[in-house]
Length: 72
Image 1 (cartoon, one colour):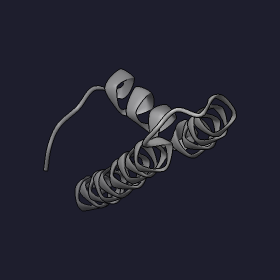
Image 2: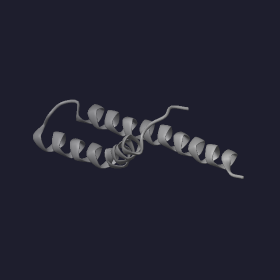
Image 3: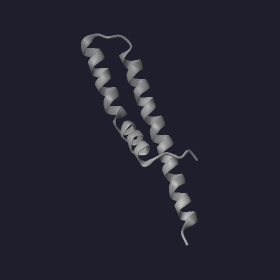
Image 4: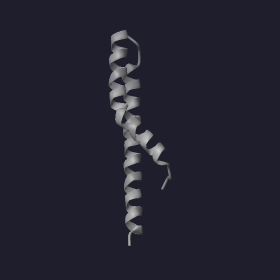
C-alpha cells in the first residue's frame, strides 16, 4: 500500500472530484473560442479524475481494512 499524508489524500480527492467540472469547462471554452483538440483535452482531464478516484478508493479501503486488523 502506498502511504500518503492526509493533506496529500485530501488534495488528490479534491482534484478527482472537480475533474469532471474542469473537463466540461474546457470543452465549453474550446468550443466557444474555436480552439482545437478540446474534446481530447477534456477527455484526458476526465480520465485523470477517474484514475485518481479509483486509486483513492482502493487506498481508503486498504486503510479501513488495516484499522480493522488492529482493533482489539
